Image (cartoon, rainbow, N blue to C red; front, side):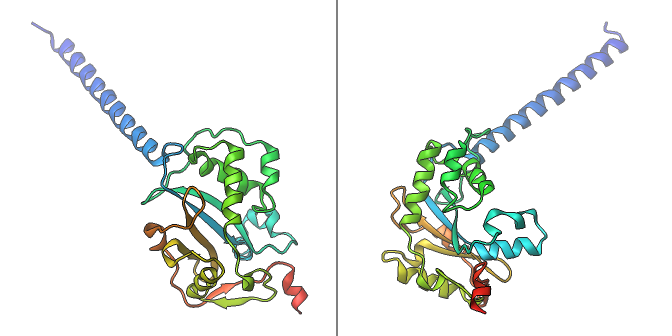
Amino acid sequence: MISPRISRAFHSAALAFSFVFLFAVVALAQGAGDRRQQGEPGKFDFYVLALSWSPSFCEASSERANARGNDPQCGGRPYSFVVHGLWPQYEQGFPSFCQVPAPRLERTIMSSMLDLMPSPRLVYHEWDRHGTCSGLAAQAYFDAVRKARAAVKIPSAYQDVAAPMTVSAADVSDAFLKANPGLTRASLSVACDSKRLTEVRICMTKEFAFRDCADVVRRTCRRDNLAMPAMRGRAADAQ
């Protein structure tokens, strides 16, 4: 006959084992979920080229007293639309941080992109979060960024904005559609914050042709009155 002390000890050990087993199962399931969220490099459907209106970024950062207000793109040079990123996408949703830690990005590659992405922090971040999901080596990924940007023409009205403007999301869409034959409303999304135009996002195939993207387009900004701050340095020139 088993003594009460041994029985209690056996019960406690069994209970502890059950908790350990349950914890392991939950951790394994969470790990599998994380891997699904991160995605597999090279397994995606299309790209989104995100073009950020740099003056809006700098103005918003300054209002938040954010350290990014000291970002190189917020200095004296008059940036207009800059490349925020080239993002691999699924038909619904997108992968991110597909390799952790990300393969090291050579400083020479980062420096070579500053004409399009005028912030070292931005270049490194985009490689870690989005570039690693492309399935491309770093140089090939940033070559792809350059090819995607070259396929899009910035409307003339937004190339040298010397004074603040008020625009609607529809105005911005119309201007990009007019400047880019083949671009349609089904492949273009405008982003905004509570008061400013922030980005234009253009969906592209892996060969950098415009393509439809319903999941991206349905989140487009619908506001009629959006501030479009002047390019830094240009406001003074206009006075």
